[in-house]
Every structure is written in C-alpha cells, then in structure tokens.
Image 1 (tube, rainbow, N blue to C red):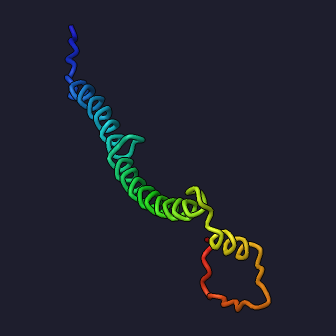
Image 2 (tube, one colour; image 1 turned 180 degrees about the vertical axis):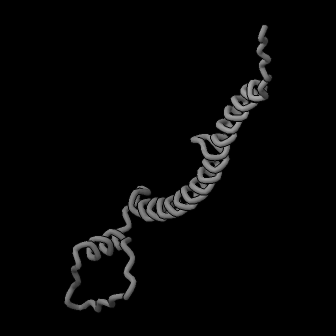
Length: 108
C-alpha cells in the first residue's frame, strides 16, 4: 500500500501577517499623505499664516479708509477734505494752483 506524505508548507502561516501588514501600510501611508494627514496639516498651517498676513494688511487699509471717512462723516463736513478728494478724483485744478505730481501716487 502506498501512502502519501504531504509536506507542510510554511506559506499558510504567512497569509494572515501579510494581509495585516498590507492593511497597516495602507493606513500608515494615509496618515502622512491623506487629506487629513500630517503633510496636509503642515500645508494648512502655512496657508493660515499667509491668510492672516493678508488679513492684517486688509485691516490696516480698512482702518485708513475709516479714518478718512470719519473726516467727512463726523457731523461737520470738512470742506477742504471734500474739495481735495473731488479734485484728485476728477483731476481738476484752478488757474491759480500749482499741481505737484508724485511718482508713487497712492489710490487714496
């Protein structure tokens, strides 16, 4: 009578650890490169810093405009301020005035 002996393979013992390591590597990859990963957080922090700097600049411009507006809206109209702004916007001058142009004229 012939008997067959089956040699046990070691590959059966490696299937579960291989699948587990694949799952762990998938999640480890997404910890760094995913939408909510470490690198995405660093990019978000950089973007927040840029936007906060832009916000500070816009607030300064707003305060400047509010200061100029307060000269007109505080109950007593500054006629000189109104006259100056109207002439600047319309590019008008009287005959007895001297106009001095600046190189970097601000858009006030």
